Image (spheres, protein in one colour):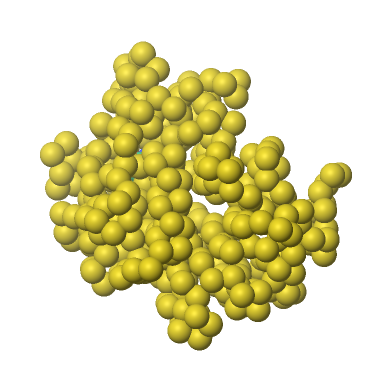
Length: 341
Ligand code: UDP
């Protein structure tokens, strides 16, 4: 664990001993920091737990930050201490490795860190009496479903260690609910992109939108991974959801957990609309005011032709639906990049 000037150690209590507080684990990351910002805007108190391995302290302004690596053997004890000291009544758990390719190359690291991290969080919740838990899951649990719309009823069949650790995480939540009287929700994210605030933008160049923007900035030609799929333009279709909409789904999940009726534990989060790789690149061209002619490359192994979210469950149960379009997503990503230059 790295410590920097101004941070507190994991043994010192967080500030708020007298109020409702949400512990956001991995709150210095891209998605977590958007949720932190929304909670703060709602007037809620937030304690961020993060080891700052991929997150940034500056993203957590307004929240308490405790530097802590949740995969370490003593993490459950330290987390329980923070939960009790802060009077936390809910936890949102983001902290995990999330790169599919890396998970194939380093499966043990994914199994160890993603599973141990969640186990420590759940153990700490049981010890500290924190009832409500929201967990970051992923559409990667579904693998390569051969359906038009992916519903939560589909039996997950993950095809890489990353997706498998997320699916196992959902089982862990179910077991912890039974054993410790917790209330949990897993949100299965589809393709997240964009920025709600420029300073919270995705700085990792891992997904289509940042990869294309990065390539263009370096004067390189973006590459489309295959145009011979069984889709209208031959390129893969995904469901792109704005990170601010996704962050809002976490707020809806917390409200759901605080309520009486909780018929489901798992929700897809997407827009219900698919966009092809070429459509995304066109949208980026519109946002930049330039025409982009990508290179057509080989297919990437493990890519399903289409992955579009069925949004019925989350709309009907949480009352949540997306508000932003693909152009909104791409424009916000472009603006955030410009602001960073
Ligand atoms: N993709 C692409 N070129 C790239 C990066 C991604 O054509 O440089 C495609 C990829 O094959 C997939 C889509 O863009 O069909 C979204 O990929 P990403 O890695 O962002 O997310 P995934 O859907 O794999 O989780």
